Amino acid sequence: MTKSALQIARAAYKPKVPAALKGAVKAVDGEYTQSVADQDEIKRLFPNTYGMPLVTFEKSHDKKAYPAIHVGVILSGGQAPGGHNVIAGLFDGLKATNKDSRLFGFILGPGGLIDHKYMELTADIIDDYRNTGGFDMIGSGRTKLETKEQFDKGLEILKQLNISALVIIGGDDSNTNACVLAEYYKAIGAGVQVIGCPKTIDGDLKNEQIETSFGFDTACKVYSEVIGNIQRDCNSARKYWHFIKLMGRSASHIALECALQTHPNVCIISEEVEAKDQTLDDVVNAIATVVAQRAEQGNNFGTVLIPEGLIEFIPAMKRLIAELNDFLAKNESEFKLIRRSEQRNYIIGKLTKDNATLYASLPEGVARQLTLDRDPHGNVQVSLIETEKLLAEMVGTRLAEWKQEGKYVGKFSSLTHFFGYEGRCAAPSNYDADYCYSLGYTASCLIQEGKTGYMASVRNTTAPAEKWIAGGIPVTMMMNMEKRHGELKPVIQKALVRLAGAPFKAFAANRDSWAIHTDYVYPGPIQYFGPTEVCDEPTKTLQLEQGK
Ligand code: FBP
Image (tube, rainbow, N blue to C red; front, side):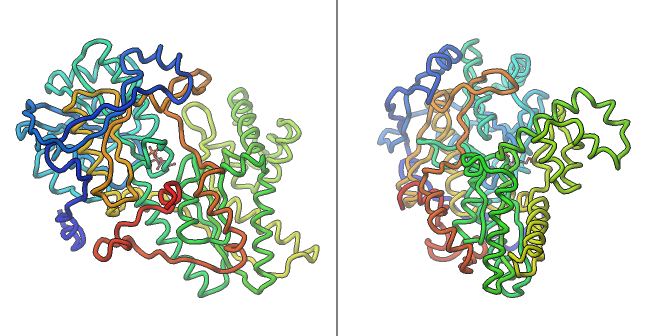
């Protein structure tokens, strides 16, 4: 494998860890916990793993002897920078307590456990992937581990490999499923502990105990670097409006963090659009107003950040999509017989009044996308809708109308971008390299202490790493009951952007000024060598949330 000069230099980086994890460690049990909501129901569903205490790891003066164990690890869902360091931390933690312990990686996500596809992760392999981005050491996948048959099939291979603990590195859904698995294995006395680790660039797996999901830091820094570059280009040529969509399936944390880092002229926050019951037209008008105001000052350029999940947060779009899903599911064969050129009018004729008006107002491409791309459940794949193009086109149309009415005097040329995959496998920032390694090491400590149904947690991460606090949180503590596919299920509460939270407030306090005055910030690339304020700075979101 040919390596870049930076990769070679980075391989030697020793992640910073909390002081408590250097040397012998002891677990200190804290308060007993309860779920964030629906306590009786969650307790009933998780009789063996509900209510367990918080755990914190502290330095110990006695070096306990731990037996050699076999542990399995799974990477689940979308890639996020730092996953390899979670595995490296886990490996080092296991070896530190007993050099004969062994680690096995299941290939291509949870599917590897069910299909019995695995590889042993030896020191050579681990060393090759330290501080690297991506999940390619063992691959990842989106198979959901949720049925008893899957759990039993998985147990066969765990028993065969003598594995007594499984670490699942994933987002809210994967960690929910990890907890269901922990409960099941405990209930049947399988002798397999299950520990989760918080991963997702989307940043929506967080709460009082889990400060952030890993990968959010690096991904936002990569996107902010490129947004900064675009803004500098934009401010140099002064002739384009750039519409930039940012990944984040549901929550707008990535868009918000990038806005805080780069000060764009406009940033849409889906949660605000929903809270204010805004229509697509309201969003278009808001952007067009900023374009018109800047044009009055002779500035026919700017940047607009758009969160990937926007469409699903616009109440009227949600209603339209629901009716389309329903209608097309029932009338698929009839729809297929309609000539392509007549499909749009056919749909307009079938929808209820408000939905028909909205559908008729959509640009041709998007209207078509809404009737075509459906997932296996028959739903529109909203993430495939090119919101950046939709908004650019609709803003252009609105400005043309305003020009006719004499309300707009400028020139409008737009360019569109989508940043997602560019950041998901980037080499982890120091923050993610350190945080991930510490999470993995903490997971090994939870295993050694016999815990199951816990998520590894590392807190106080805006302080120097020495002062970080490592521990474990019972996963049931983060759960509530939510409707999924029409059924009430226990799930980890997803953390959306809080409009009352400090990051949104900081953005809201500045956005009017950023809209009109060109106050772009150019964060530049992630740095690994240099002063700590350049190399180790956590996200603005985290700093604001922690009052820094
Ligand atoms: P996870 O929540 O599984 O970490 O994935 C998040 C994400 O990167 C979203 O931001 C994005 O919408 C989605 O994955 C893309 O999915 P895919 O990798 O299947 O294209």
